[in-house]
Figure 1 (spheres, rainbow, N blue to C red):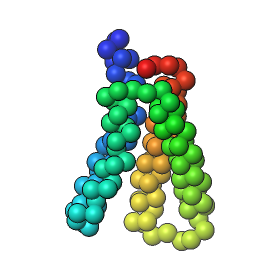
Figure 2: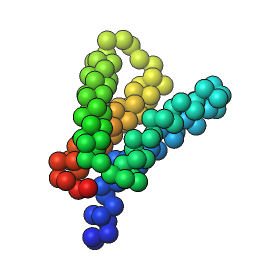
Figure 3: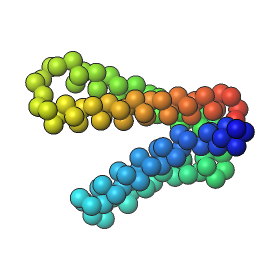
Length: 119
């Protein structure tokens, strides 16, 4: 049980790294070589896995909580049926909603890790 709780602090970083890796592969398939700049977004999360820093951890948490809050507001404005949506658009909105909520939860988890002084 202690090994599980020992590694749970890395879950948000691995989540954001997997999102960045998916974003990179998707853009790479469609656009080509312009996708390499996306990998730069993964450097702070990779750095937190290798050599944790409390200030960077708190900064990442604050930044992504703010971005996720903005995404939640944008998502809610889309969900309020301002425009008539097709079935495929509703499916896309459902999965994007899961993504937005996942980002918000992982951002709060990063904040919790920095407040608990896990590192």
